[in-house]
Length: 500
Image (cartoon, rainbow, N blue to C red; front, side):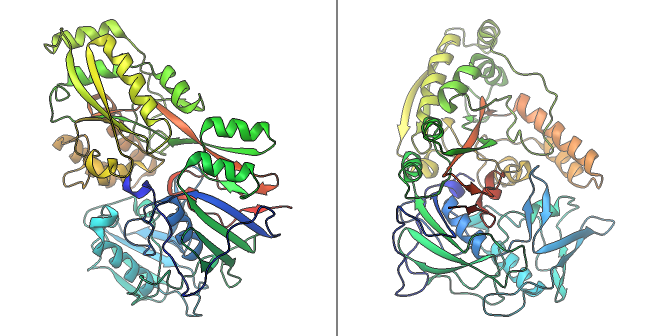
């Protein structure tokens, strides 16, 4: 999950011997120059394994079609798939595909291509955190050119959501992704690339609404301040995810700030299998010991919402009526005493500088928790190794989440066999209720069941979500069509345009 958002840099030479020019300050007409989070040599051209950075997701979303996409409210919407209908058991789903999608080679996109792509994703589950784990793809079939029968391993009512997670479709039989992006059926086609920038031209054969821009340049840039500066200096038209101070500077200079609520969280992780956090009284004391408003103001510049320990507060299934957790130092101290820690406890709090403000969050948390007897020594880990050495391993650290659906968090972090169960959450009754909720065909009742699971996780689990920061994109004058979506949906740029 975090590795999906770790820094990455575009691999060289999508088309051998063809290099992209560096973006110019003037910027040609009918072109949008986007600087995206990503850097450093970790980029990939394979759409089915790990996608290291947003710059990778953007390149894939321009080149390939996905089966479904997240709507403004996070619910699945049609893209290459036009419908997904279950049988009465919720274990066999009929997925209908568009009949007018074609690859860049001119070949029609078929259900066999979609099934091949899903099976290829399954073969790379160790890299992509088991994106297709809910499907029995060996039993699934392409019944004709536009119909796919998907079989699930158990009743599963959220197949539409499962299909919106980077289900990029490539031609059946594609095996060589080492020399660049293989032909796709998406709204743009890559035409040239260097080690940092890829230039895409509009695919006029795309089935969807004609993209308003003829050319989109995608440049990977790791430093959020540098991304903002690229727009301020005129070297780019749009910067993804800039710091609050840079957004304020850009607004003062006449640029537009695109706010995307609920996009960024730095939850405090407490492993429920490691003392002192294995004691639920200690976890509750820590929840009551933090000043959420101070953290939100200091880390996100006040641009966001107070956290209420819901791990996916923008998900359609997340409860909206829970009382806000307030700081209560006396109650927190009493809980510490009940846990046998009246004299306090010494712990190590891990953090990093991989994302702006993660180290600031740790500093404030340490200061606030000292008032309840939790003496936290801060250890700042290198950003290039933090998510491989600290994440999922240490018992107490500042983590990262960025606008992904609740069921994605469940799959990768909250169920038996999850590849990255960072809080060591293991509750058989919770898992049984999850299976019951996923087998509920009625949307409202299913969401209520999933909401109840989130409430219990909030009260008993190992995540402390103190704030939810807005994502801030910075745009030059005249830029329109930026997607309001967060998480995976933020990678779709085909409607972006700049009037010059």
